[in-house]
Amino acid sequence: MCRNFNLFLFTHLVILILFTCDANPKENLPIDEDTLVKLLCDVHVVEGALQNQKASEKDSLANAYYNQIYEKHDILEEDFVKILEVMEKDPKLLGHIYDQVLVELDSMEELSYKGRYKKK
Image 1 (tube, helix red, strand yellow):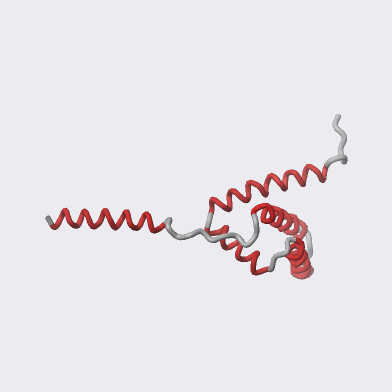
Image 2 (tube, rainbow, N blue to C red):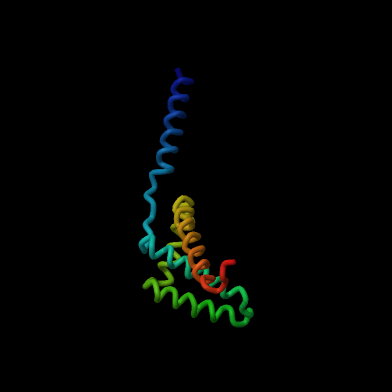
C-alpha cells in the first residue's frame, strides 16, 4: 500500500511540475513585431558599420548610432534591453523574429546592389 501511494504521489508531482513549467505567462514585447524587425535590421546595419571603425572611435559612434535607432523607432534604451531579455527567454519568438530579420536584410542587400551590376 505504501509503495502504491509513493508511486501515485511521484506520478502526480511529475505531472504537476511539467504543467507548471509551461504555466508561466510569456512576457510581451514593448513594441509590435514589424517595428521590432525593422529595429533589429537597423541594429545589424549599425553593428556592421562599426566593425571597421577604430577602437578609439567605436564607443562614441555606437552611442550616436544607437541613439538614432532609438529615436527613429520611438523607443528608449530600456525598451531595447527589455526586448533582448524577452527574446532571450523565448527561443521560439527569437527564431520567428530573426527569420523575418534575415529576409529583410537580404532584401536590403539586394536593393543596395540593384543597378550597380548589369546582367550579362
